[in-house]
Amino acid sequence: MPSATALKQAREPKPLPAPNADFYQIEDTLSAEERAILTKVHDFMETRVAPIINDYWVRDAFPFELIEPLKELNIGGLNVGDYSSRLKGLVAMEMSRVDPSFTTFFGVHTGLAMGTIALLGSEEQRQKWLPPMARLEMIGCFGLTEPLVGSGTGGGLLTTAKREGDTWILNGEKKWIGNAPWCDVSIIWARDLDDNQVKGFIVENKTTPGFSVAKIENKMALKVVQNGLITMKGCRVPEANRLQNANSFRDTAHVLRETRSGVGWMSTGVQMGAYEAAVKYTQQRIQFGKPIASFQMIQDLIAKMLANVTACQALMFRLEELHGEGKLLDQHASLAKAFTTQRMRETVAWAREVHGANGIIVDNNVGRLFADAEALYSYEGTFQMQNLIVGKAATGISAFV
Image 1 (tube, rainbow, N blue to C red):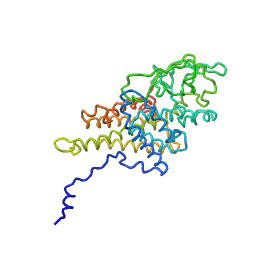
Image 2: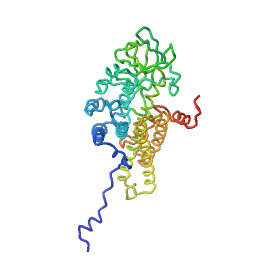
Image 3: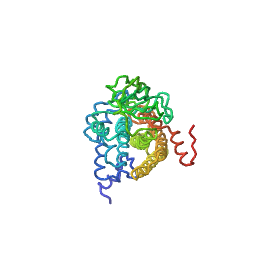
Image 4: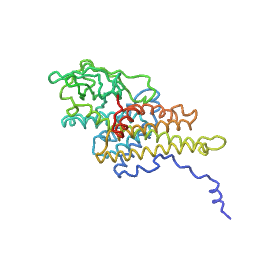
């Protein structure tokens, strides 16, 4: 006869597994040092960012209180340091699992602003700007998109640059520029009136006459990121601040190739956060006397979400292998950006669906992730533009206008 203890154990339900979006154990591919960095980021996002981010999102405000603790992680130089591209991607993924707005702030600064200086600046420029930016003593932004020019930046920039001796005169506007309302340094792209080529400039926001920024209000996505409309009227920038290796849009595209990969990781992280929130909710939400996780149609959605997440992780993992081998091309990054953002839209929608009415408020996080996903789907090149890049590579024929 079974003992009383055995009978009690038989009656007690087994503990449910904790939600885990790393189904294929991607993180296990990291070295011990890399895992330690990722763990620090995970703990920071869970203990410092997660408890306050919904409030800041609702208020359309940036949590400046997090800058100092972020400095303590010592990851400001991650995107320009001697780290694997895989680790950089997994850090972006881990951040985005909690909040893609915070990742966008971090990515604009470390990836776009610092990354541009690292790739296209002279050695003197790298030595001057990158160390204080890596220490987060100076924050940067990246000014490419304009009010009337988005996908057509390759050949249609309206912002102009005119050289006068050792000074460049910049005139024009930039829109949707993350970090711009409060940061210190802007990477500004402008069309040289003399040769009609795109040039890059390091502009010091707070000390350059004729440079002004207006915060963009009333956004529905990535509300924590402060986006700005930059206006430049006769801004005088010294030749020493012209990026010495940025002489055409081809050079600009090299930066974008790197950051599109980052958006792929971010989109994967958003899916992970939405999936884990959905699993937790379905385990706890009781209807008809049982958790809704026991319903077949709910499990179907959970399985489809996990398939999307895992497919995106595997795609991004291979993309970073190509990156590490020096084989990453524009079409590789474009396919990743297009695929992961499309799958992200599905995943966050299903996560919101399993939450029912509770999914339209920020308290459960999925409402915020659902809205933020729309921005990731469009920025760093729209879905359609990415597919045209892939289509040209596949067919050998350009379909661009």
